[in-house]
Length: 112
Length: 114
Image (cartoon, rainbow over all chains, first blue to last red; front, side, top):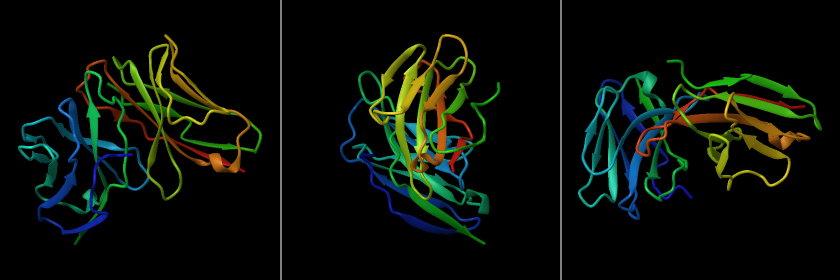
């Protein structure tokens, strides 16, 4: 049980921002939100994670709502190479679940 | 710093043989996770190990499958008496002891049982 909900698929035009939503309404205070992606059959690639505050790195931005029940991964300028399955997951600390549980993810297709 | 190394990348076994999959974690990482991905399906958690200890094996089949992470050397996922249904990609991930850090995945071992 992934305990997160994501749309099964999304499309995005190349060069535009891709906004991928995730619902984690039952998240507990000791759980982070993690995002990974899997391009074709490669190993999953870490993107970003956060607890309460919004986060940004060279790959993406993570916007977490104030109540922490949902978040959005933003790829600011999507390229064709960003076509992948994107997974939103919860991972705990200090007694929370310490493993990543993958759901079905969102299949993002970036179109030229 | 090399990434998570898995070998072999491809493994072919006949039904009834044993498969041994190896995972060398990143330097400084003492936590290892194994996942299985059947064709056209998502990743399923199998087992979580720390050095010399199995922490969570809730996703591992009770029979024929075992995992270890010795004090020295790589983590090994062992599948005895393989069957066609074991054909899948097996991914390993590693992370450092810190609780709030990300895990990094290897490129997987693709097991084909013929």
